[in-house]
Length: 566
Image 1: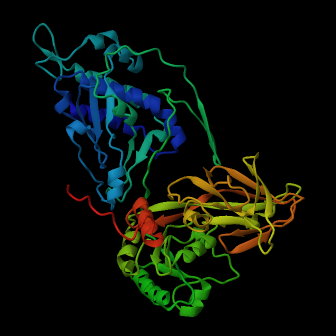
Image 2: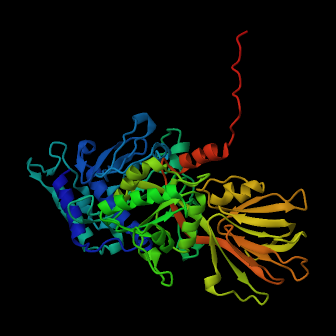
């Protein structure tokens, strides 16, 4: 195939595109049209001899005998994988980000893109080619043309490809089918069309057993259907083309972060009245100022140390709109204070272990310089640690003012306070009766808080990557009342009945407290703004290191003796 002609065909599509990717919803609406365009181009190339060794735009075409088609490996700059029998190869973007071993190990190994062959006559109805054009097949002696009876060669392939280019160029290509290359990876911003390739599903790869199913007789397809997918942001209708229900995302080890512009403002939060963190604060300020970054500190810390920039106590600093990332010097309590400072959007948080337990602090003090350098460059991964929000509703169902909504990183506890009697609570989940609580209290915890009060009350330790909420009773008056792990989409309503002997006390992350009157209810649900905690060696590795080193999980005094010989 004439690669230059094919590139001109792609350029014809690019010429119709002037804007960047609009949104994901409109992009999905254009997938079907782009697939038809892609299949038409691939069919023209695949019908020529020797196509497996030629280059095609930004990808490479190679035979795919198992599926009766060709495999397209898109050279997007990231790694693609061949099947296990052919080996695999690793790639990297033009600017390599640091990838931890856990990220490379857990990556999906089936990122092979494939396009099935389509008969030319079937394609005629898609691109509008006439019957005469379909009958013109390339000559074996002349790959770029056909031979007539006189031995002359006619360049029909160029004509077909040119007609394809004109046909695709005249079709409207919405802005949703475009992708914009980031300028930091290229000399200039380039807008090019997104051409959708069919991804070989990992399920099919797992259960195919290497059998060739391209010629097998398939059963009649099942009836099509639609899915209404809803969350707090709204609902969308999804129609699976393969008529299969699957999850959108499975097993992402952690999220990668990259700056689109250099950070300018950094908030430094330190453990109060501590000489060690004060000396570290001075060093951090010096490092940031050398990088032309403004260091911000709290008013009390500025009064204590005299360094950095601060704000007036009576002013609303608007930190969530100003701060690019946060440096935390202290222990777990300091991170809880950071969560309290940012009730809504939280910038990335890098925490240094300078407290007592340090379960949530991934970095050591001696790593201050190198760790801050990595964050400023944007070479880091983070764990989105989920939070809870809670508010009180009175006996008439009227919610308190929005300013009284509490946001918690660890847990929300409802207990008997100073009273010696059991609390009496009615708990509903998503508006449905769940249970009656007769106990010292209950706590609702995040996965982050599962290693705190919840663990002491008998709850399970939960990995921070789990999207769940823990419901743990505190000293219940029944043996069968066991802790639960609920979806983080659940809405829990804890009501104090009018007949209750005790008015319980609700506490939020062990700081703020509020007495619940008879007839009042506490509504608890997941919060949409997590705390993005920067990882040191990966989400899972950091968590298990903390579990073993801080809590001595599964640590025994001596190892089992080796088996002795007979």
